[in-house]
Length: 137
Image 1 (tube, one colour):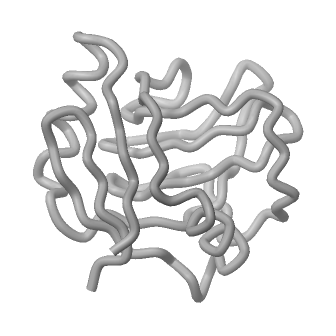
Image 2 (image 1 turned 90 degrees about the vertical axis):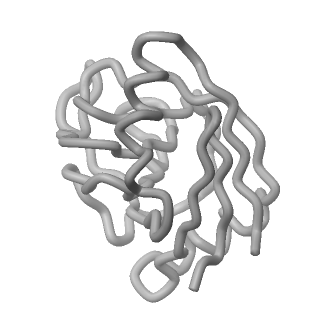
């Protein structure tokens, strides 16, 4: 079952909200749908794309937090030591910033289309920011 449809660059993905392990983050994210933005390639973390959200304070606690999201996992860093952000891993990620190691809330997992994650990451790295849309299902 998919809860979210993701259109990123020329690719389409389906994803599952991790409501049992990150209920507050999932509930917040649902209120943002449909969510339109642009993703850029990460600076320090490895093979991932991110959406910088600056000083946005969603008032979220850490839940289901990880420093090492697997390919297809989307995390939300609620802010604090570095800026608030969303990160989509397409390969190996060691989540960090100029402040050092960070952990973000794993709240969304790609369940369909994962074979195109690496292509999306490579396209973002070499061609620049890509449009991304998250829609509820």
